[in-house]
Image 1 (cartoon, each protein chain N blue to C red):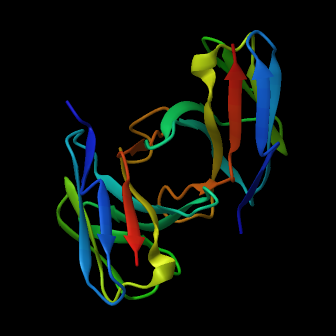
Image 2: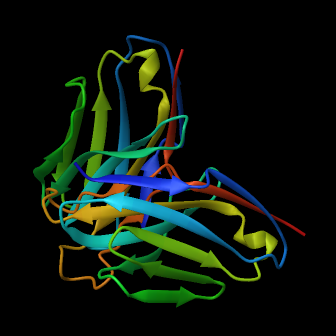
Length: 112
Length: 116
């Protein structure tokens, strides 16, 4: 069964203080690894899809990287508007349909 | 324009009641999903439909019954509601695999169900 573990559970940052979020995964074969952002009271919003080890994607202050066992979401010089819960998910090749298995998320708070 | 919409946004009801949550997507997607997010924020797939055909049916009590009248709608009916059903339910949609290079799932705003 596919499994995803995210750490830390919560992260408090000062504005401008860069940090990284970890997503460790176990999957029989990786079809894709996904990062989503979720604001309070809203649905998850797509950020990135990574398909193979060594792949990297960037969007504004966010950069996602992938190895065979884990993914990192790097937040560079964060701003208060980057405060959200960041969710990692995997789709395994044995999973039916387009099933995503999510981790528990990392709650990020960026203080001005 | 709202891509994936759900109604109602909030639902408060008594144990034992039957309730429905409606979902509509205007993205032209073929696949729709229902997820449950519990109090610890874990998001877990419940069902997936592809062109009105059930594809994913996780270990969910049979009190939960999805209904897809057409590929733009996926409703969730819950019978005999229990306290443990309290959660936020999200609808999502996506293109068929291979049609979207990101294989992105688009989520609705969620329905917060509270069972008293």
